[in-house]
Image (cartoon, rainbow, N blue to C red; front, top):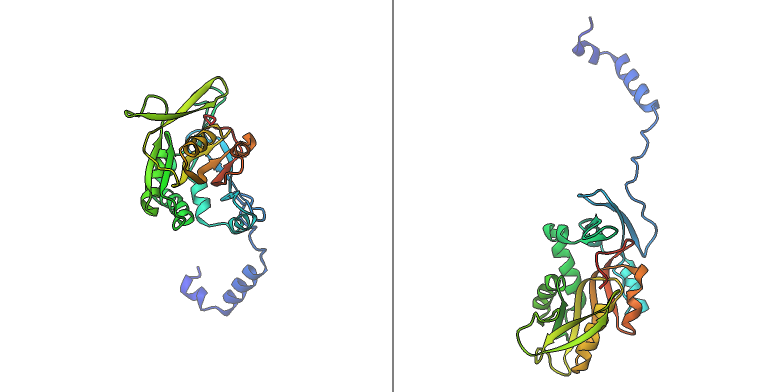
Length: 258
C-alpha cells in the first residue's frame, strides 16, 4: 500500500496530476435562467412563488415624456431587476381567467420596496410638484412616501362614498358600466402641480379620469407614475399628451382594468 505522504513526494504523481487535469475539457457553461437581449428592455422570466405561473416582465423604466429621457431609461438601472423579480402572479384570482398581479411580495422585500420609492423620488424631486394624488387603493401605498420625500402633500382619489366631506367627482367607463373617483373639495388649489400615482396602468380609464378631475380645478398634471404597465391594453394611448412613467412592463393580463 502506498501511503498518501509518500505519494505526494513522488515527482511522477505531480506530472500525472498536471497532465490529467490540464488535458481534460472545461466544464460546460451553466444554463442561463433568463435571456437578456440588448437594451433598452431587460427581459426577465419570473416564476410565481405561489402558483409557479410564468410571467414575462420587462424592466423598462418606460418614459413617454421625451425621446432623450427614453434613451436615458435604456441605460437600465440595476435596481429594476430586483423590483420585477419581487412581483408574483396568481392565476384565477379573484375569478377564473384572471391573472392577479400581486405586489404584496414586493412590499415584503424591503430592498425592492425601498428601491421602488427611491426611483420615483429621484425622478420627481426638485420638479416643483406640490401634490401627489394617489388612486385608490394601491396608489395609497406608493404615493405617501413619494410625497413626503419630495416635500409635497398627498391627496387621496377615492371610490364613491368613501370621503366624508364635500367632494368633486369624475366618471369613467369600465368594461361593463361606469365608475367614479372622488376628491375632497379644497384639497388642491388652482395652479398647483400634481403627480398622479397608481400601481398599475391597464386600459388607462382610472388615470384618465384622475387627470380630468385635477384639471377641472385648475391643477397642472405634471406626469402619471405607475409601478407596472400592461402595454397590450394600450392604456397609455388614453392619456393623450400626458406623460407616463412606469418601472415594469408585464405581458400578462391583470386582475382589474385600471
